[in-house]
Image (cartoon, rainbow over the protein chains, first blue to last red):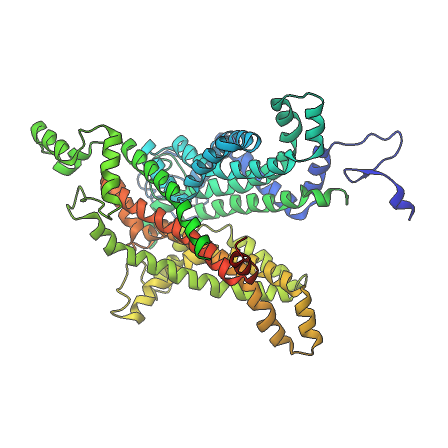
Length: 301
Length: 319
């Protein structure tokens, strides 16, 4: 019974003289201790390191064409074999990590920027602005994601940046909806009324009071959107609309491999394993974040 | 119910109009000259000008849009620039194949996903529940087109039991048609089946904790009857919703899978249209896709309302 009387903050007992950690710190620790969180975090971190360190770890030049070395089997001179131009598949997979993560970053940051800001505007001011914004984003959601990606990359022209923009457009309505929904709940809370009574401006209430409360659901969606972006990039590159040859991308490597499945089956396997690793990492991370950032869980420590 | 339906249909109109604006704008951003595509590479400048005038390409864009919309609402999508066939005929030829693929995938997705979800729910927090959950995580990390390649490697290259590409007309010879359908359908279904498993498990757990299930057990009904008649039937409502929503994604995902297995459907039509700069084809196919997608979502909501007596009855009262 005595335990129940100890006051807690973010799941930590309040002991006089002992500093209290902020919510960010508590959540980070909980994420690392969460089994799925640790798994997802390490896989994702591994691939980020691979992407950043690509020039140092890749054993060969990913673009170097070698005649006479075409479609070499793996586990020889080339660890994962070579492709139809004698290029080292491992090096191309390592450099391909950059394309996947770059598209993910562009897509998610642009998606968050536009989605969240329109969500805040629509949710706070309501009325006609909100109705108009909702209509526009509903229209985007009326397209199957991959088809919109195909149409937009066809219009903008293929390439890594344009793929990122196309995927960002698909992400915007989702971030809009999450922000608006959270805002509608927060707007009715007492602290907003209190801030308004004290004479705080709309901008101040939204930015200082409401925005911090939207961070958790948006953070979870960021990891979900990242996984979706990686998947869409690979799909668009597979269809020939993403990264353009000779730039190495997992999706376009898989697409090229189809012509050589009889002679070189491994060519169709390894880039997919890389893709699966990144997706598994991001999926685990988003599942763990959802648990960790759930406000009902926080005070349980 | 009628009023509800009417209201929902009216709400669709602005979305479809906006979507048509988006499609029209995107198509006109694609670089290249449609008149050139239509006339072929050897056309003289005079001939090109004549074609532009004939197709209305010399009009300002908003006028072009309205002219196009006027035809689209009558299901006239114009003529393909490259094959000179009416677009609606091309779509009619290809839509069946995509629909067949999506339906097969939807059936497989339920056949795989639902039993796993039920088993997981009935064994909550036992090892089998954890195994299914781990299996689901793996499935959700496998992109459908890569799964397609792996299946081709296994069943076409290694064991030589299934054809790696192509489609056989289903009504002509169902047995052989199934052989070429199974790999594309399974590639498309596996990823989606993971959501079905998750939703079935969650819905079953919720229903199993309801009072009427406890009552049914207290009455002394057999466990099998309780699960099938009382729990499963009610758990089906959210599951049907998921399957419906997934169907839209299956139609979209078919675009990639069709490219893996050389399946002659709408996806291939769109990709070829983009490659050939055949705008009318791509425009028409996209309009059709979006309309189906939107109507599908409406259908799901209506089914949902119909299946759930709480929603059905409250709609009757006019609330």
